[in-house]
Length: 304
Image 1 (tube, rainbow, N blue to C red):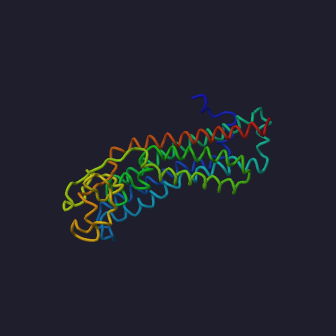
Image 2 (cartoon, one colour):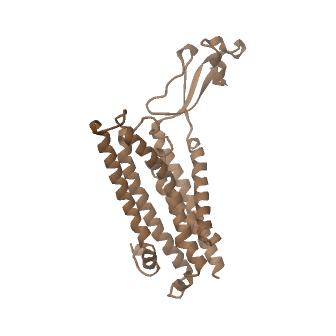
Image 3 (cartoon, helix red, strand yellow):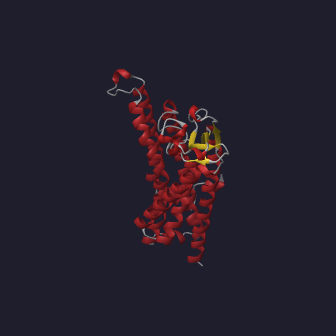
């Protein structure tokens, strides 16, 4: 608790950025009001101009999911720009260093305040998002594996926000220009999110279903599973591209020498959600720790 006590450089940081910090709970409150209004609207068809009862809620939550993806970038850009780079660019950080504050304590205060605010805000917004997502669970674009719901419903959102804070602290010191540091932070954080988003379904091995008769069609995974790949198999267990059978409605759509015997489907079951979340969260937190280490290393180099 003592590490979070508002005194010294932490108190100064909160005072300097109190408007932005107050904007975070205001954003959470506004988001909650928005979701509650959408759920009320969706539950009162007599007041709707939509042909689909959950239309307003669906559209609103689609935009909310996209906004959640941008949250780590925005938080990181705020740390890189106004909290770090602007003070270095203008030279006002020197005033803090004359008030019995070390460079390390100055930067630690910035990071601590930003990290606590980012974690609390992202966790609260994730709870608000879940409230709006619940009636749409499992429908088109609102599966547990879809971009937006995947990030917003688990722990990776908080981890990415903390990564944004760490990258922002590092970029702010390296670039030392407000707008440039904000741009670099948003770019780096976004690239990490895109890269891990492309790799996340490789963290765990897929499960496979097969059929031994081609005419039975493609086997369907159980429940709300994420299909990764599908195609034809030969009698020896080899895999063929699906287009081979797509030429005909019969098994002779493929050349006879291929010996087509059935179908296969690779998929991730819904039970893979939390293990995948845990692995990705751990990877992101390690990257955040490395960025913080680099930020303090740069600080030590410049203030020897």
